[in-house]
Amino acid sequence: MSRRLIVAISGASGAIYGIRLLEVARQIPGLERHLIISPAARATISQETTWSARDIEAMADEVHADSNIGASIASGSFQALGMIVAPCSVKALSAIANCYSADLIARAADVQLKEGRPVVLLVRETPLHVGHLKAMVRAAENGAIIMPPVPAFYGRPTTIDDIVNHTVGRALARIGLENDLHAVWTGMRNPSTQAG
Ligand SMILES: Cc1cc2nc3c(=O)[nH]c(=O)nc-3n(C[C@H](O)[C@H](O)[C@H](O)COP(=O)(O)O)c2cc1C
Image (cartoon, rainbow, N blue to C red; front, side, top):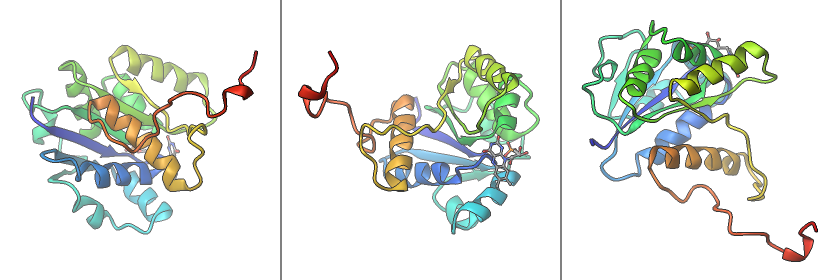
């Protein structure tokens, strides 16, 4: 299997998750990074970060326009380890859940799923109505891994970076790209505080 990772940044809040993912992925030897940034993500990037889309794109080996449904990554013949949508909007979730491949994010995800490869969706919305929840179920039934970027506090994060790194580390690990970004649980700090 080729050492290729597809990263998509869609227009949900949390563009920093996709950016950090690329920062980390480019440190992984031999990992070819393919990137899609949706038009809405360009808006969230400008609202939420000081990054330019150009600087984010510079961290990828290949950048594909979201409108380019004829891109290499739109075909199942394109070998990859899998795909991470970080963050994943409800729109992108819904498209993936319904195989509605009108843009490259949805098409590339659909292709990875039909080829039996992992697709991790960092779905970000809250609160969630039943339509959102049903879309998550449907996407999961198609094989997607639903991984909302929900912080864990047992690692005692002290910065936003800690929180972002934990989720990014777990998402990469789910694709099979082990890393030391996320704290591994080794048991209670102080066993005397255990209940019971
Ligand atoms: C600042 C900002 C924050 C947003 N946050 C979210 C969000 O957290 N979740 C979500 O599903 N959509 C969010 N949206 C709306 C999406 O950007 C919008 O639905 C868009 O059509 C998604 O398109 P895409 O999936 O092609 O990126 C946000 C939009 C803006 C401008």
